[in-house]
Image 1 (cartoon, helix red, strand yellow):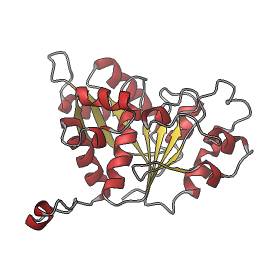
Image 2 (image 1 turned 30 degrees about the vertical axis):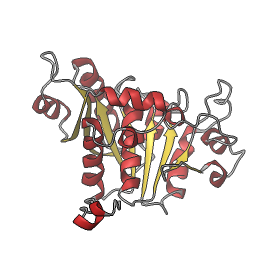
Image 3 (image 1 turned 90 degrees about the horizontal axis):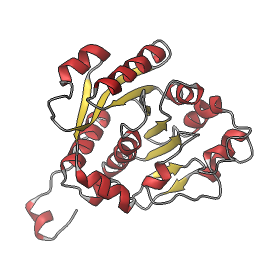
Length: 248
């Protein structure tokens, strides 16, 4: 069971940050101490998804060497710990993306560290991909997204162990690639298929993970199943007394 996982994709817009936020939140719901790092240094969105975009100290300060890591770790109201990135346009000056590996290593007292990496194949994306024990590829069932995901796979193979693939925003439309085709092309198993679900966009607008906004939605159920698969933990079944006395 990996303790640190980087979520990466070949292209932007596949919903990687949504997967990262909800995977982290789902692991936390399973009772696992979880930290999410916004490793997208150029265009960070994780803190916006979580409703807390402005922080006094961020990952950029840590990578610049101007602040200790512990001052950039924040507790979110869902129970998650978050290391946010700065949304300031001037924050990229003087940072060292290669130090992200040190940041991840320093947080491994937690049970899981999730890194939301940058899209693409640049230095920033590769730093995120190689910062963790495992990489999780996020794609859509579109030809262009899968093609770019393949480029990512080929680029990081040999430097990072790939855990598998999450196919996000599955709509079961005629032009979408079949899961067997995606597995055949990428040569890695699909660990989760998350359906297109309007609740996800509603949750983002409300700035909370969909597993909290709409816990019984189709997407939320898939994120929870992914967390269970990665952690090896099943949620405790509620007894009759739990239901009677409305206990969680």
